[in-house]
Picture 1 (tube, rainbow, N blue to C red):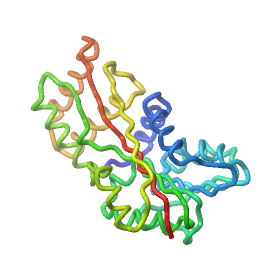
Picture 2: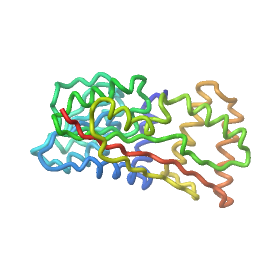
Picture 3: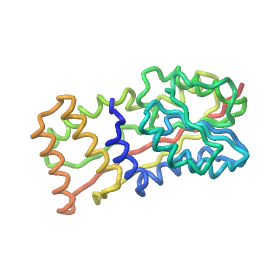
Amino acid sequence: MLKFDAEITRLLDTAYLGADLTRRRQASFDALQPIPGETILDIGCGNGLLTAELARAVGHDGRIIGIDPSVDMRSAGETRCREYPWVSFMDGVATALPLDDQIADKAVSVQVFEYVENIEAAVAGALRCLKPGGRLVISDLHFGSLVWFSDNPERMAELRSSWDQHFVAGDLPARLPGLLKDQGQTVESVVPFTVVDHVLKPDGLAFTMMTLMKQYAIENGHVDVEIADAWFDEQISLAREGRFFFSLTQFVVSARKLV
């Protein structure tokens, strides 16, 4: 798994402000439908961008609680949300939320559950914290949807194979609706959001993944430094030649707690 240290926090901070991840975040925000006065949990809140957007939506009569295990991420979130005193941050993970039962009207988690070993426990934990009738929005990537061009498909396969080891459930969106129904909940919608790039943008999802994938593969000894560098450099060259192509889909799953 990636270590969310200060360097990665800065990289993600830039990417999260870019158009790709802003639109992706908006898809989760729209599915959640926050209204003034609500209490909302942001599970795996990261650097607090969505947390701040939710704070503005619920207003000073509401409450937003951001939960994240990374000190660096929580620190970034606290700085971003310092003007919203109705926002608080807590140290915690999805499978062990440090919250009372039925404390929230809604809960959201963006690209977190795909990293969780026990998905069933994480879903049950989020539902435990919701009031009856509360809404749960879980948004994750399906890495089976990844399309990424390379003149060297074997080398691309090596980097993708390395990256597959950094998450637990790369196919989570396909499993999640059934899991929620098994737990007796109502799935209201599953909405796809696809990032398609034929231009390599410095603040885009593709460039962010390139940087993280290269670092992850090298640090974990999955490929030699020379191979990782060549893969990265090839994508830069393809972009300069106008031959770059990348596509990946995230699915926003919305559920309603029945009891």
